[in-house]
Image (cartoon, one colour):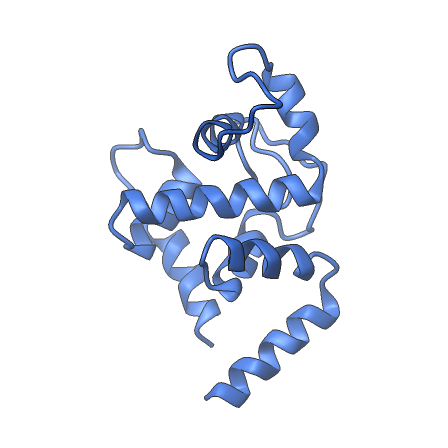
Length: 149
């Protein structure tokens, strides 16, 4: 089992230029790197760092400005003023892979903490937002099934 996991992680790292960010920020925020990898794959299969969708979700991890503001608040980033930074400026920052992966992993950890480490709910909330009344768990289940293979 450990050999299989190590082999699949080595294969992922060989073929993905963003694996270094996945590893770094998964470790920083105590996340399973394979879950983060498959979250990225599900969110943005083309690994497009410049992608912005209709909800202003940006980059490979499809991070929204609200998650960036939460990261600023929690991590106490003093070089930014959360009151005066526009969504347009945030979107510009989130297009940088290092920022996108850092904030995306932070936000997934935030969702896990908020929903008592329930990966299905946390991943669904990551994707659908905290205000959605009825969650679709298929999204989360697909990520988790791929991550445990």
